[in-house]
Amino acid sequence: MKTDDRGVIEMIQENPYMQYFLGLEAFTYEQVMTPSLLVSIRKRIDLDVFESLTDDLIRKGLKLKAGADQEEVDKDTKDEEDDNDDDPDPHPGNKGKLQLDATVCDADIKYPTDLDLLNGSRQKAEELIDELCLKLGVQDKPRTYRRVARKEFLNVSKM
Figure (cartoon, rainbow, N blue to C red):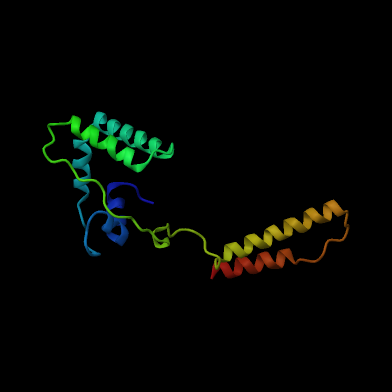
């Protein structure tokens, strides 16, 4: 996974969910921003601002985790906004609900149809047979054609 600026831009360009998260109303194949924009944003945010944002995020996350109601967290943020009188345009709170589905999940997971899962289960079964034969003291193990199965798996996976 490319995590440099160009890689992030490519991920946004290919993923409709990321484009929606950024506020685009429809999916587009065009580049939504230039990598130099990310550099300029990074230059504007100095270390002190970044640390204060991180501290606020952690504090609010701990309040939510500790069982505080969302209203209390919103009340705390409003109190902090009231303290900052130099900000003429206070932002309204969030409204509505966020609905997610499984299509947002990563695409690089193994699915039950994957051949590697079948081979892994074959290997686990062979390990169980070996362990049972050891514990029960069986001298002649049952035929499992391990070498043939491994060879067939490699032939199919090369296709």
